[in-house]
Length: 117
Image 1 (cartoon, rainbow, N blue to C red):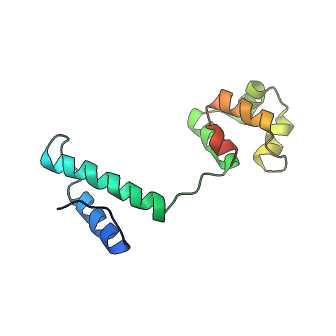
Image 2 (cartoon, rainbow, N blue to C red):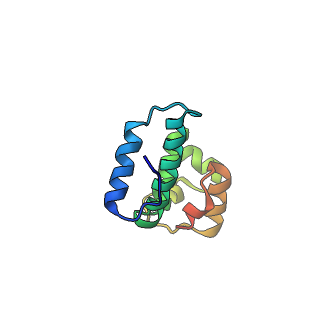
């Protein structure tokens, strides 16, 4: 397959089909190189035509807590705030302040750009 910049949905679908067909290709082989290039042009097309919106900050906090096995009680200790504050924050009754964003970034490793929404 000749790899070129994807300009429309039909070409995008063809590129996806080809990538799927050679997905298990080993790196360093002709098909592996083809797959690598295909994935680059597919990503470029998707970034422009099918952008993924950033996650909601509160959803990101909840997901990170779940992934790290952190309960609300532990988060209150890490953040130095009351259980009530964490509960209200996670239920969206309290706004996410800049100082809380900084703490969450430091304590949980959530990227600042996600917390900023």
